[in-house]
Image (cartoon, rainbow, N blue to C red; front, side, top):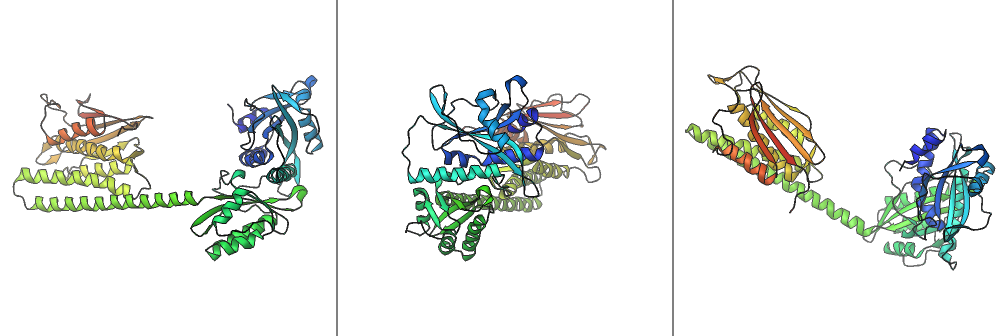
Length: 508
């Protein structure tokens, strides 16, 4: 299925600014669909058969959440011409909302057609030519008894439809703002030109009651009410100013209001059909439980980061104690074993240090690998150091993979530096290099640790070798990482370790 932009660019000559306006409309028109109890279809004129008359292409569609749809099938991408879209042609040519005509039938479903011309205001504030038409099609199969809620919904929908025709709806979206909430069903309040409430849906009444106002909303000055209810005077003043801004014709951003441990999200929209401000539409949603969960998650995340920070500190303390012990040991093999333990503990501490600064249980692994590689290179002789470098990127890895993987890479790098190069009086041959090459697929990592040293001994058998480092590598690779590893000599000299790590979700 092609996108709105692709369909418009392929079949019309509309420019980027017009297309952006249609995108904003399609991003905000669920509101009008729900208020209208109708499907909305966005049609753009296209060149068709001259004998068939004007043709229109449907580039977007939205179904109401408050009523049954008029279309069971998706209409996007369908081209229509002739009598079927005559009402769209009238709306486009005459630049007015078309409401005449008898009901039409789609299979067994009767529907009422309406057509709303779409204009975009230019930089000078003047409405331009009609660039598209919104078809508003209502399923008439379900009989409705008009209620106060339904009448207010339909009246507000007609006002917003006229604003589409005027080019004043939708307004420019504020940075970082979404169109997901609040919606019509969450709570609707309609204000007159003076800011007094003329209608409040039952859900809106309940949301405001959570803030501490138990009386009926009709007749109340909503801006003054928000100012009184908010616990924070500054917050109340901001909420009040946004209501007043909507009454003046502005489209302010959403605002959260907190009072009595409750939180209500509000969105104010100006109502100005034909350019005349007649009031405002305020949508409200009780998000108290959502905010409580958000705060709980923030507290949990902060606790987890603090735990990682303390684990890192404890590991660094252990490493320092081992380092002190190594300085007091006279036996060379014991000292070497303690120094290896220091490096292993330090590599794990790196992961926890990164997790302590992360917002979730995932780490940017490239920086960790680079630090481990640099630490491994320091094991070589200062006069002839081993060069280490990374090719490719590991990206973000979950902690359950990052911790064992850094241990494996640490052991492979240390083995390459300590045992991969010919030594002469404690010096490493010039040009010694260890390369960590990584390729990341969607569900797996392919890692190669290669050196240009002397290669593996002829009698080397990785499955029977008793060295602790190789045992750690095998255990972590096949156990924690559920991967495979192969050690072999490189063509042209040196050694390479081929590591395969699946990234699929692990079973608990």
